[in-house]
Length: 175
Image (tube, rainbow, N blue to C red; front, side, top):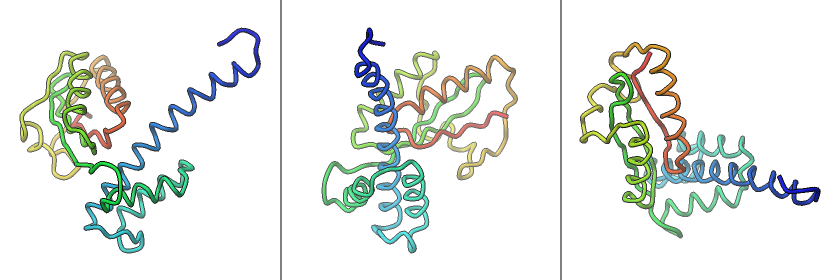
């Protein structure tokens, strides 16, 4: 906090809130862009259920309409960089399989960010298919029991990965 100036105190609080909000809006915009691309370029929410869901989440977070429209336009190639979907696989604490689903405009930057987080926990990225066989869609075919310390470590890992703005979803097979 800054000294006695009321405005400085407000400014620092607002900066922190705006940073969180901006990160959330980026994730929501990427989800909207991905939904349009997965829906074959259909921009009508009534005809594209994943887009409708993404827009509902964005509106629930008070995302401005122009940001929603920009995300849709970006999916159609009208502006900005193309987003690509990337899935990373690894094994976490206690042998838990993790699938990290992302939407990014720069795979190299994202891979470095994910590796940095994994290195913090002495983990590394797996080869393609090394963990995917465990999951049928977003449901694991079996669960791995963990003790409380490993669960805590896994929760911290998931929290750190979710802090990356390009990460959309993390699936694991821990109980």
